[in-house]
Image (tube, rainbow, N blue to C red; front, side, top):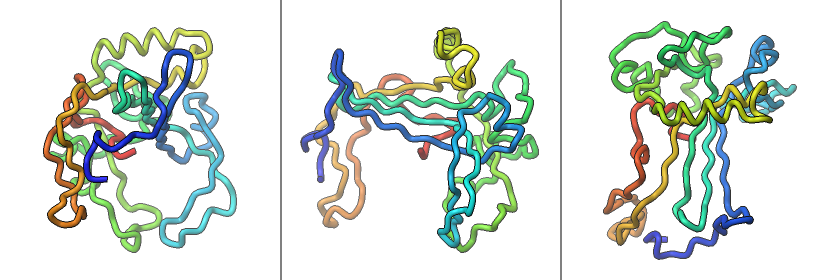
Length: 225
């Protein structure tokens, strides 16, 4: 495929009374016994793959959900609506006390320029390592901060949802919407491969407009899900 949206999109869109295509992408973290019993995380049992040997652990471990994306194709938005949710213990938030078990993605040990400017530390934390270079266990923790606070209108929406029956008093009260985005225009053409090199490289010709929040902002904690 060389151009979009000229090529057909075969996923069915949702319409009133009928669900269409929905994609869920999740991020998990291994839980301690205290965290697993805290009723603050949605948990599951999982086998962990060793990145060096590619072998699964002999026994399952308890993992906790720390964030997820929901992408939903609708009749009105064929380029999908993308929503990001996170567990409330991921990072510090203004005016919110620290969680009893500490933060999932911030231990408070670093305050360098990379953390203040980019929202993560060490500076090369974004760069994938060859599996042969990954120490087991890791020798240095990655710290993350949110540089773009969750907007006040989204915080108000989260507060209302947390009061709903089926949410209030459950682990889902500990999850919050961070933001949502959807496409508002379709520039022509949107080239996603370069015909000059046989389609081997990505050369987008237009920035696709999105509703506010659509451009990636420093501080989005889970951009790579």
